[in-house]
Length: 125
Image (cartoon, rainbow, N blue to C red; front, side, top):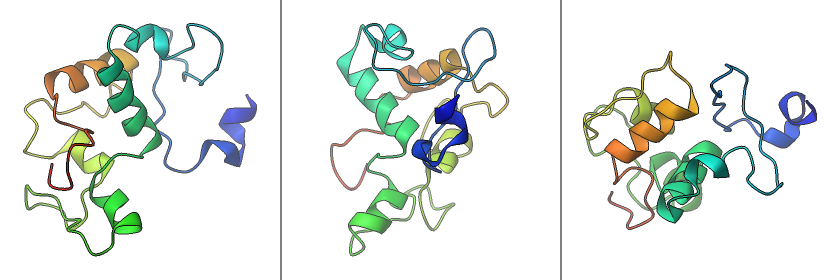
């Protein structure tokens, strides 16, 4: 409860819900809230963590940490590539995340269908 109502969460944290429609809260306990979903793949877990915390090598991240690098979306629709844009309307990814389905299951499905999203491979992904 403290996590949800405090500033500790941060303003860029992506809220996802479980099968019971309750918001998943992070925990450090073994088999934590998210690890049970991503435990089979280190890469999937890393990409999900980057997306959830909004610490992915995308335009808005570059805008803050690498201001001399390009930060617009390569699809040409947005001047600053954001997580919201990637999940909801970017043409580069073949499966868009449904904004009304904010469950972790649909989020994992989006990541699995789009293996290049939220990858720290280069500044031009």
